[in-house]
Image (cartoon, rainbow, N blue to C red; front, side, top):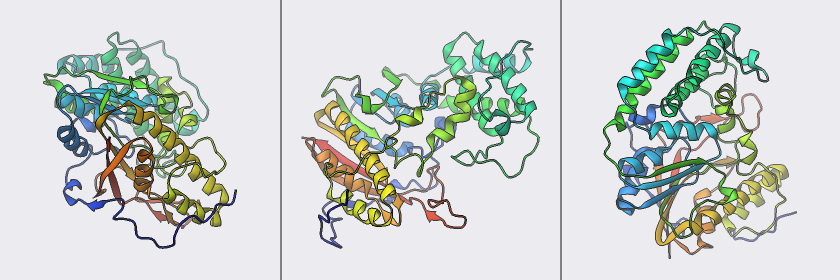
Length: 412
């Protein structure tokens, strides 16, 4: 449908949305992958200092925290460290696996002994998990060596230790594949060199064991529950049971922002965990644009995008439609007086910046939340691409997000 022009041009409403630049939240010089967060790279990872700050300021020990887009478990670790109970959900099986490993203390000597056994243990019977294009993404020698490692890991009886080495294996898969490990998307590396699979596996394992020291001596009574779950299907929690929601939802549809599915696919194929989760990502199913979402800010942008590209306008609308429904599910779980911290980035489509922070504030207001403030921080440590090619035309690049918007809301 053709969008109606329902707004006033050039209206300055930043004050209405209470944006405030907060340089103290930039955390320059403190990588998001410090300590325990060095276990397995993950796209667009939450900065742990943000999570820590708001958990301490807005909750007390024993309170319940929810992250419905938990990714690699930054909020889970911070809940564990600060004696808060926690529920984390994500549709990506790799994210759930990484989160479980990051929140599970394991005896370091046991891990070193198992690692030694993996490297020395001979293996004769092993299976290769053949999947589409396996020989495109992996050299024949690499396939055989990965298959042997995989067989050894799957024989480990202790599920916690097995999960630990599955995560080591996943990172190894990324390092030894023909895909560029510095890219989110599956892009073949330009220069190929011979790789020592066992050596890389051992190096990653030792690095992760050191990272795990970050939680090895924790004395905590926290209940940490992490499950693969789609927020659009509803959340298995009682209404009004959560003290704080702290999360960083996807910035947009996976095809044009962060390709979580492509980042995870090779690892999940090797681990036997691939389940086409990308089909359940926000905005995957296209919808016709309708005037049924409560955000004038959104329709301003859709109006401009539709003038340039009707299909892209529909894709943008579909993402925000799903995000609105996710917010509806999340809102029900928050206690009166509880808070929501939504950390978002404002991407650009067809030259139009989408103010996701303002749109989310609009959405939450429909469910008895007041928008207290939006704090703006510069992204200096988040693993994001500096430029993208949204047109897929060689040479045409667009800058990606330089700032994050921390939208703080309270249920009344």
